[in-house]
Amino acid sequence: MLSTAWPAPAKLNLFLHITGVREDGYHQLQTLFQFLDYADSLDFSLRDDGQIVRLTDFPGVAEEDDLVIRAAKLLARQSERSLGVGIALNKILPLGGGLGGGSSDAATTLVALNQLWGLRLTLNQLAELALQLGADVPVFVRGLAAWAEGVGEQLTPVEVAEPWYLVVVPDCQVSTAEIFSNSQLTRDCSAIRIRAFLTGQTINVCQPVVKALYPRVAEALDWLSNHSVARLTGTGGCVFAAFEAREQAERIFSLLPSGWSGFVAKGCNSSLLLRRLRVEKTLRR
Image (cartoon, rainbow, N blue to C red):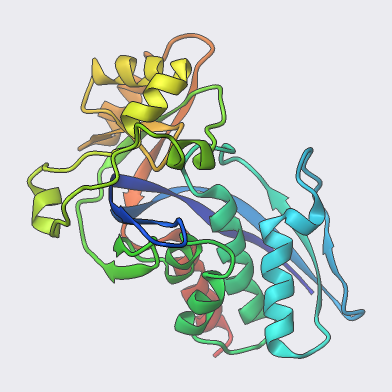
C-alpha cells in the first residue's frame, strides 16, 4: 500500500520569551505557534517484512539520527507489532530556519502511520509520544495554533488572525544550541498573558543574539523592516512579516534582492496535516 503527499507544514513563532531555565538546563518559554500552508511532504509505502526504511538520503544526517525514522520506530515499538514502512521525504523547508521542518516531518510520520497502520492512538497519546522526539513536535501532532509554555509542550489552542506572510530565508543555518547557550540571551522575561501579544507587547528574545552572530540574518531583518514589521521565527534564521492581503506580500516578495530566497504563505490556525487527517478518517468510515 502506498499513501502519498502527507503534508509536514512549517510553523512560525509569532513571539518568543524565555522566562527561566530549569535545573536540567531546558529553557522555560512562552510562545505562540501558527502554521503556514507551506510544507514538506512524505510518502509512505507499507511493508510486510517489519522493516522501517528511509527512501530519501540527506547528506550529513545519519539514518539513526533522522527524526522521521526515529518517529516511525518509536511508534512501532509502542504498538508491539511487527510493522514495516518505506518513507520518502520531499524536503522544501530549510534546515536551521526556525520553521520546525524536522519536528514537523516527525509529527507527520506519527500521525500518518498511526492511521495507515490502524493503531487508533488518539492525538493526545501521539502528542505524549512526540515529546520524546522534541519539545515542539507535539504542536505539529495536534495541528492547532497554540499558546505554548513550559519547554513548549504545554499547549493551549488559540484563534488568532490568519494573515499572509512573507518569509525570507537567509543563506545560513542557525544552531539552536548555540543560541540557547549564548550568554547574551535574555532568560528572565516576566510571564505574560495572550492579551500582551494581541496588543503588540512581545518580542523574540533570540533575535538580537542571532542578528549579532549571523550577518545574513541581520541583513534580511534590516531589509524586511523597511517594508513592514519584521521578526525572527524561533531561533532563526528565517525572518517574516505579516500582510493583510496576498497581493501585498507578493509585491514585497517581488522586490527581494537578487540571489535571496523566500516564499509567501498563508497563516493557518488549523494545519495542513490536521486537514489531511480529517479527510483520511472520513474516507475510512
